[in-house]
Image (cartoon, rainbow, N blue to C red; front, side, top):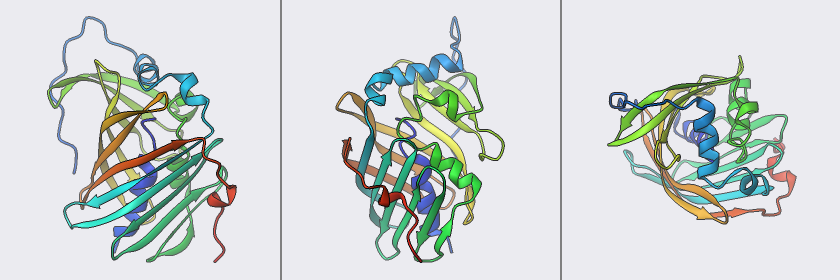
Length: 252
């Protein structure tokens, strides 16, 4: 569940805050036999609970707090995902109001106090499509190509680095860092491209907890050139009954 909504949350914050760069990893470690990208990605699925444990769920709701630490703004976030391929995000920041995004499986939309209601462009839609909680299991369908980059040292631990590239028109590639021992995702580097801005985002994931049969990263720290966002999820639920109206574009 590593893609549990990294992209959609950043899109929400970019919209709300509109008018770093990641630290380099250490030198590559020496392994007797390097894994393939498929080995690492399938290993991650196994590490968080396995294909069956993930695919048995039909919906997921995550809620928690967030803080833009360098400017002292706090707020809340709720992320709703429903199979097949529906996502809705609501982010409220103190003094800035509420930003919402939705994807109903075909089209995406966004609304915020500054820009109002608008349709998402193709790159934004591609991002949100990759955010459904089962996307890690379906990585062969989600990504056009995957490449094992190497094994490095990150924050004192060995990590396997995988570059994931979408189909043309689907935005920029993503680089993931997986703990070589546990198999868990610990960092994601990507470039977010929206109508509001294009910026690099480094996301550090931690505080993995078991929700039912699945491990979920409950804390995310997202470093952008203009802000650092800390999200702490406090409530994660599977198989909540969700009305499809949640994902539908609001009337103007």
